[in-house]
Length: 528
Image (cartoon, rainbow, N blue to C red; front, side):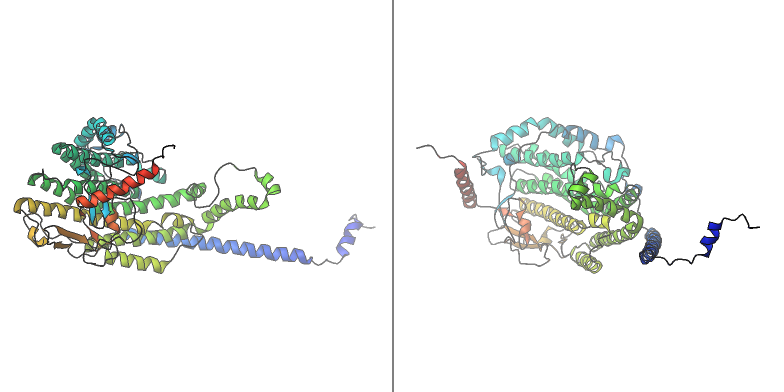
């Protein structure tokens, strides 16, 4: 009797096994290679994660502080904090249009600047005299300037910021800080023009105090501090051409510039920027869309048609829509830890350069070593999305800080020279003659670490200069290198950075004639 096992099943078992078709084999091999490739990427990802953890542990063992909380400034008691009252007044300031703002220390020839407050009329390329507009603006702001100046007499200025927000931190107060510095400088010039020297001194000193007080450990905050400080330097230069000051006032102004701790702000912001970078990496791993928000994925902004519609009508654009999220996902899954370590290593090069510059009291050697190290490291790989966004500007920022530190030293040295003339009737034969009566020691040129250069001129005036960004002493040559601009700090474009002297009446008249010629081109000709 036959078993109940189906006959068809027996037939099936007796058939020969068919070979796997070639396309299927190829597909299986490709799938296997893909799996192995993904496994390799995952293993490399884990190794990169371990290497990053080890590198961070090594930095911490050496005393580095990587967390944002490690660098948040202590909030001072209300009685010593200028920030709330300062900001309450600054928020009510109005902005004078740029075309009506008087340019202070306006360079009109190499090494020569117009003393703005001395001009009976203040012409521009569009107006014959902007004094009435500028004066009215300052008078309307008097009460606010007074409130801010009183607030700035307190020893600290710390704004209540939530640093834990990282790159999402909003900083609306910085625009007001810069605006206040500009208004103080503008008011000092108007006061000098009107002969109100006491008010001019108060406004001048308040502008310097902004540079003293703004110690926020953020790159943008310190750059705003530099910008405001440059405005106050220009106002100080203008004030030194007034003869109404006592030695006590000049000494107070000189001390104000000497106690501006630029290097402390430089180091503090460098440490905080590294900590914020770590926040950025952690945030982007949990939320890859952040890479797009920061502009690292290169996706276009604005409304776009639906993906399926694009796929039919414009396949290339549809493919472009897929690329950014694909890059973000691949970064998150495989490349983020290698990216973070590369960034941390570069941050360390940057921070070490700032520390070396402070230790050596010179920028040249620290800059050369940093440049060599960054050049050796090269550019980040295309897969290092955050490093490519966060790091390119770091070296340029160092140069900005070094420049202002040099300008600061030139400024208080120039004040000391004017104090010498006030007491002894003439400028000294050398900077050494200022020690110890007006300075504790001869100031050094921060660019190369050598004493600032000085020369007494046959006409009794002086040349005071730094070697500038090329670190080469050209003997006090103020000739402009590169294109001329309307920036009042064109003297920092010279072969050497020469503290400007006052332009002669003839030079000012020629400059004003040039402005008149430009105005004539703007004036419509009468109909015949």
